[in-house]
Length: 619
Ligand code: ADP
Image (cartoon, rainbow, N blue to C red):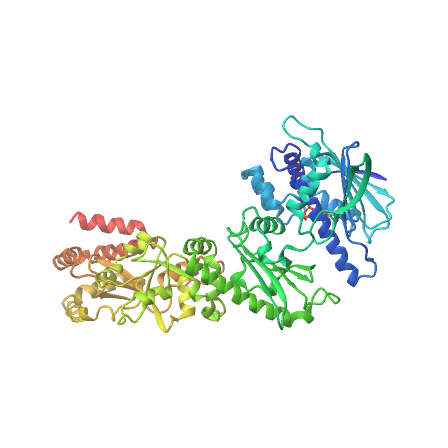
């Protein structure tokens, strides 16, 4: 029975894009189809080990070109497709992240789309006016023929097909004005495309070569690909371009990787790992839907797509694969019995990644900065999580801009240049550099020439809390607690001022009630009249972050208003108070709101602030 079905809407859009493609690299269709064939053979091979329904076979991919009929056929001995799978996989975009794809359709260029999403099977319609898929799955009673011209419909009908696997026949388009489609029917062109894109495919890609010798036509069956997986070839042998091509295709990436790590380990544990750090985080990298993991192979045979245990969360940006002969394939895919080996490999890889990042940081700073910009949050969360358990592994990989340095520095660099007598690592938190540099609390640090780390990310302060210290030097916020140690020589003056202004300070505190815990003379201010600081524990920045969390409890930092009696504004307000104590509410509000504004804390009642200014200015 022949059924006609409609492509899903998003598929139709992609197909339209394919059939009207102005993309210059039509040739990638072959790579896509060969890769699908190879995946299907992987699946069959793997299944055959555990499921007696699935027989073994000679695994190969065969390309058949027919110049006269203008067809190119790709035959594989893979797992084939059932009817449901045909509908499910060829009728819709099977790619993970269909939604992301749809969104990208709107905003991305064709080249970006094709590169990023790898378009897969549908790329056949870039070169073919009609595609036929004959397939037989070991799980189906019969074979099926799927046919489409890539417009809106496809048909499926039962056919007889003995052998398990798939044959995809492309009816190659007539040459267009500027595109030579006929070349995809020529042996040499096909051979060179296989070399270019699919050389590493682990199954033989075979084709008949027809030559004329002594006026006689002879045909010879040749294998087009080298077959050794790229990671099994000696490092010196593999060209950077080949690695990049492999990476893009294997991991659906558009751009070359930022860093490639190719490592071969022999001994108690034998494995090869080929790891990549993508230039940019995946579109869903910072969401729950992102899945970390490395591909796992045993003796070059594919086992698992995303093995999570091979990579820790804080390096989850690493893509790649591990191939180990120590993992035997014959038992369950769950591979519980391999836990120990996997753990060991994981621990090696972690060290390797860390040391590669450290050398990048040491020798290729600019590249490291690019890496760091993309993934710093992952590293920082890595330190913060598990109560700082992984601090030692990660703390030398994080960087900070500082009050003295444009380009970010490491904690070690900070310690190396701080004076011996400085007992803390000082930091400020805020949304922008300018804001932090202008914090009233920065005055004292500037005057004492102390370098301050500038922290933009919400996680920073939580991370410091988890770390507690770096090389035994504790972290300290300049916006929190007192800074006694910095301000030793000011103590006397502060004590005296506290006495002198006792009444005034008390009146301010009474007027502000519970909004602040205390009103104090500041030792840290020189140029600003007021600032707000928090007590020990929750800081003002943490208060903001915690209160943004969904279902978070409402948290309040302890607020302490610090005033600067040496400032003209303070002196003026004091005089005003002395001559008329009815003004105290306006004075207190003015000082308090001013301190909040300087800190970037939104005012709950901005009108009270402007009223206070108005009242005092009209005096
Ligand atoms: P992708 O391969 O990236 O998932 P494709 O559009 O290329 O996307 O293929 C969609 C799905 O169709 C595949 O995931 C696979 O399940 C199935 N498929 C494609 N080609 C074959 C084939 N030669 N043999 C078996 N299944 C196939």
